[in-house]
Image (cartoon, rainbow, N blue to C red; front, side):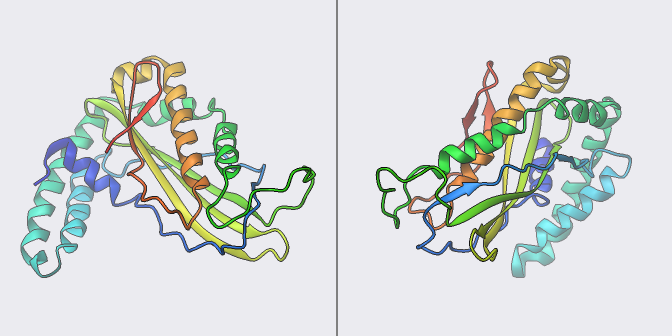
Amino acid sequence: MPTGRAMSIALLALMVVPGCANMLPAEVCRIEADARLPQPEFAANPLSNQAGAAAGAGLGALSGLSWGPAAVIAVPVYAIFGAGAGAACADAASRHPSADADFKKILSTVDMSVLKQALDLELTKPRAACQPAKPGTPASFQPDAVVEIEKVETGMGCLLGKQGFWIAVHWRVVSARGGDVLTASKETCSVTSLRSVDDWFADPVYARTEIEHLLAAVGRRIGELPPSPIARARCVYKSKEDGELEQQR
């Protein structure tokens, strides 16, 4: 049964579970990314405040409901552990009172174009149901559809031990001809840094690098548009000393 930091991460995950994507029509082959990118929105961790224990208890109870008939036992047990994790999260936040403001300051320096660049590279890869583009096809040839990024959200886990944060991107694929929405979803990725919370904030350049690498990871995931013939691993990473990310299995 999860305790401590593991429980706080599990509770936070309840808020950022990615949405399910619909199947993209097989005849949609040439897809491009919209150049417009929204500014990322910071979402404060509901456990990182004075009400952390109460919020943790509520999220723990919600997690217990997923146990079906066993929920009558799981709900109160998870509520107790959730309250403990929330209290620990709130206590950690009290020792880092400027963390949210500092994170937002770093976020303002991030190059959002890395998201589109990674998405563009993934979209150029051939899709199983499509024929390769004919030689000599002009670059101005109209695509079948466009990927639009509607919203980018990001936030931190509890400020315990290693720094952890997540990025959630709401996206949709729109027909270039009729403007119909063909599919839409949300892609969420997270990372646990090699560095502690204090060390992460002490080096804003490194912190920005980690955020940009996670943005690129999200872009690649979105570019793997459904239907995909390969079952994907979780979009969960840990960072290395140079800020590069290593996917967790």
